[in-house]
Image (cartoon, rainbow over all chains, first blue to last red; front, side, top):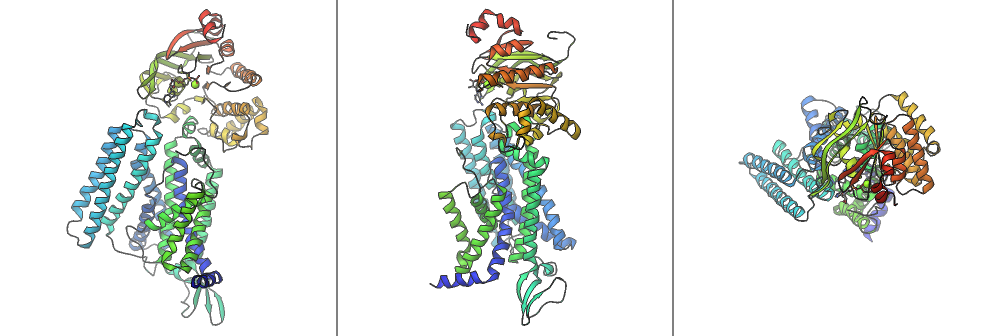
Length: 394
Length: 243
Ligand SMILES: Nc1ncnc2c1ncn2[C@@H]1O[C@H](COP(=O)(O)OP(=O)(O)OP(=O)(O)O)[C@@H](O)[C@H]1O
Ligand SMILES: [Mg+2]
């Protein structure tokens, strides 16, 4: 009953709750991106994790080269990621929504795959260790391209391309595979640009975040409202500034998001597109613009999450960093009910708590608890906590 | 008002062919709607009536021939540009945004407009046409009855202040008393001088109110003429009026 004791300790320790809330806030910020894109085009955007990664690198670049404070770096990364999100949609997913004939889809796949192969081949020539990784990525990419060819051919055989404007089914499958391809593609790009070494925000820049807001000293609890004050040498941190900042960032961004979706014109257009795209077109809504906007918002949130995540964990900036938080936030989106924003927030928080308390019981299995929860939900309530049961699932 | 040579042609289809996949549904149809006219298109199930409307609004691609809106070929229009240029459609089966309120549906109808005052005035106007919608304005559109939904769909289409209104079977699936009510509304729209292109299975009611009518049979137009004339036509009576 050792685990029961550790759980008991975790339950009595405020640090566990603080950790859970911080993780949960970060997952919520990421999950919102998955859920909004899914809500509007029914696509699980596997490249979302890579947006997290790019946002973090951009924040790091801003801090290192422009010497801006982290808060400003977060804003820069948000803007940059919004642009990247829109570009991702325009280049990778929009062509598929335009329902091109098979030949064109195939040629685009071939082109992207071929270009990635060439770049990877010529730029990883002499590197020693990183070559193995690059080769694995290239092989993975090849496999994806092959798979896409297979699926396209299969889709053609089954006649899914028969009616150009109504091939929803093949569109969704093709988009899904494209998303996986884009994820690998962006990872490879980051790998080539920044190589596979671990980086972190310089301590000077992260100072505000790492300083203690509430600490335990021999005299009791100490509040430190000035993060720039002299360090509290012997104090045990109870609450760090970065934790408070993460909570506040999540709360503020979610409120802004809900106001956008509920009250503004573009938000109403987003909901309309999520409900019925063809009718949205009839209203004069340019659905493609609305979808691009959705990608932009989700990607901006991912940038915030990425930077806060790497500040929280410390020293984890590398090309594949988006994978874990991405996959876990995806689990959170499914748990909360994919397609609903409130569900994503709720799911993110639940997963955060699961991971924090699970980790307190069995450190090495902290992520397994999150996935276990997702599996349980997929088995028994696939539409999630706040999602609605669909009449028929395609 | 009907075939006045001077009146402006709003919508024109010139030998249009279109269809789905390998199937051709419209086999070269030509028709036109002038300003202030109510024109109806009747035909049996599967004749291609909805396909005609969907081709006009860009949902189905034109394969040959031209669709012209105010004389402009719409082939290169994005679909939102059609709405911008004055086209508005009440789709078959109403297609309301069911998880949004009646008021939000109306707001989406006015999506491309920026004139707040004008929008508010038009909302008052559609509420006066459909008083029940005012009562239900904060209710989810999906929770309305069939008749109310149809009214909401028409109201939504009017909110864009269209220069031509396309309606696809507004009486579909409604009880006779509601069908009568919907046609009364269409009469009102006609009296307001609106340009309407109406697709209907209820041939008798459609033809008796329309200025002109076209008869579509498996992708070909087989008759055209003033509504009253078609109503008297022997073959039309046999095929579509059940006598
Ligand atoms: N999305 C589609 N994909 C493939 N075929 C279609 C599609 N929509 C309609 N069709 C076919 O096109 C033909 C014409 O259909 P359309 O909907 O235009 O008929 P309609 O005259 O509106 O009939 P109804 O009175 O039943 O509404 C039918 O044979 C139908 O099966
Ligand atoms: Mg029809």
